[in-house]
Length: 175
Image 1 (cartoon, rainbow, N blue to C red):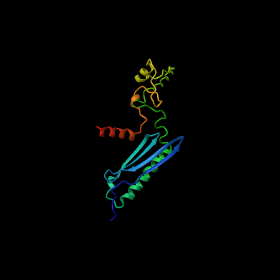
Image 2: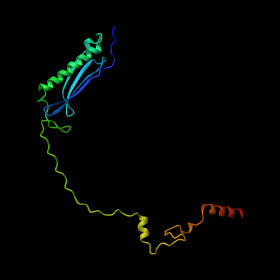
Image 3: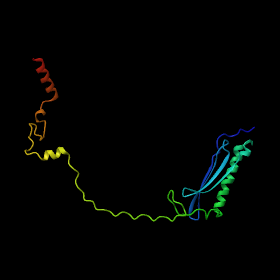
Image 4: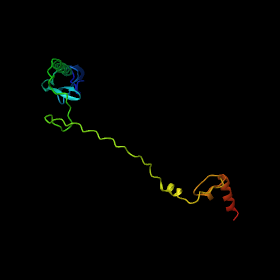
């Protein structure tokens, strides 16, 4: 007794160029839990035609996966033959519509592009600290290191950190 398949049979995909357009034909099996073979014909991402057949009546057949594969091949080839024979030449048009736009409505013209407006570039506003520094009446003092600064002149030292720590500790021990 042949074992039945649980998963769907692998499908088919073909791209066909016909009368200047590229069509995509896709056939797939839905598996024994939903025994259908579905073939779609796409152009430009849109479905032009669909064919769906059930094989629920043969699910108990031995070698079911081989039978399903044969049915899929035949359905796929039928869609390809119909395409080449012109069955879908007048289906759909090349006009594209926006979502919500119905084909009986005339297409709206594209809006006119907005004219470019020349912008005058203004420099960005300066931070308040910079503005305050610029408004000082006297120039910043030069510290003993030779660096101009607005604050902290008395905190800057030429001593190394080790020397500062040693002098601190020496001062603490002497009291």
